[in-house]
Image 1 (cartoon, rainbow, N blue to C red):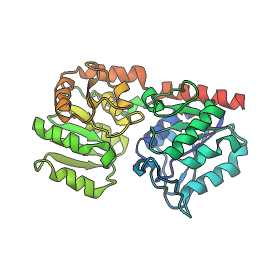
Image 2 (tube, rainbow, N blue to C red; image 1 turned 180 degrees about the horizontal axis):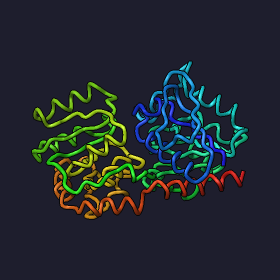
Image 3 (cartoon, rainbow, N blue to C red; image 1 turned 90 degrees about the vertical axis):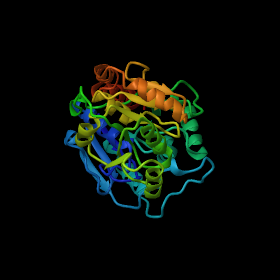
Image 4 (cartoon, one colour; image 1 turned 180 degrees about the vertical axis):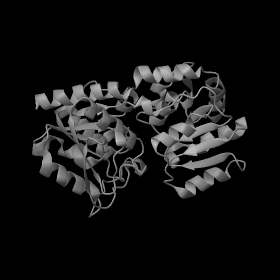
Length: 357
């Protein structure tokens, strides 16, 4: 197939502003290229494709970045900047649609969802988040009634956030495991990774690290500097070691040295990419049982779970997770989250959609 992949408008690919969508885009594009498809990626100006995606064509458009839906309240109105890159992305996608069998949208935004029944080329949506606002919820519910085959979700927990007319298509996620090195003997340090923003709950991870008397290495794009400063001030000096936003090769090399990864979301994560990245390096995970992570973490096999927002329970989960066999973490990822398996699931979905339409 000739596939047009439209990226997130919140920032350029490779910048870290797109969070987990960037990692998903890389695995998806590389996997589809490996299965013989022709892939074009449409993304904001300044984007760069990973080396694994070198066979894809990259189209970039300029414009003001779209505000992230993650920071909106349930009743907020949809806002699109006057010179917004979101509108420019979809103007280009519509102009070029005749050259493709299918368009795959990775952005969690109202505009591409609304366009679904109005395009000539089938428009598919890999929904990247759970519910954050009624406006987008209503669009997803409408698509589920009118053309449910155009929607796919990462996990059942994520899909359960929405009013769907029929059981959802679940595709999980995938990773190029050749990029992750197994580390059998870790250092005496904990890890935490994600955008540095309140909904990620870094303050809970820092508190747990302080209780355990271990340093917490933190990786991720610093989206909210004031929040980061407040978290650091809440724990003893030296508890947090800021490592910044790193490309996959550098991140996995550092993350693999951790005793475990703490995962502390304050909202319903759709999947939990960094959990799988950690497991691929042999790092067990202690996580709140909320959203996608509750489906990924298997107690005693690749980590430990506890009730969400319960810091004391997370301390106990961390101690259990540190006893997990690191080899079993890697084995779980190889069985459930390889890039090849993910690409095959996406291919089956898109081929069925292209043939149907």
